Image (cartoon, rainbow, N blue to C red; front, side, top):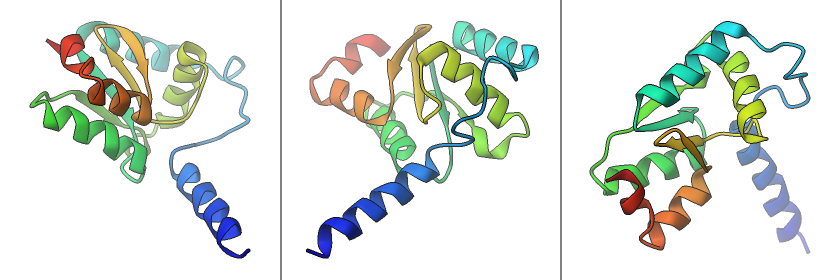
Length: 129
């Protein structure tokens, strides 16, 4: 009886570490500099992870690439002054502000659980070769 409530509470806390500014107007506040930064980075780097240092799902995604001996370009949004503006851009590109947002070869492949699932199925290795 008590356990489901505790689980829901803990899940809500975990998700709060991976979100920033839910409900802000992405289109109204879209920063041209942030748009250019994201577009240039996704184009220039084979693998890009937009992450936060406190997010367990971000750690999951980073750990998967470490297992593949691949070093992605990681942008820690909570360490940047323009982190929220970058999340607005990511929301526009991917449909969500949550992190991680992972791109491979310029294509959005998902978040932490998506990346882990691709790894578990043996598909991620093919994408990053």
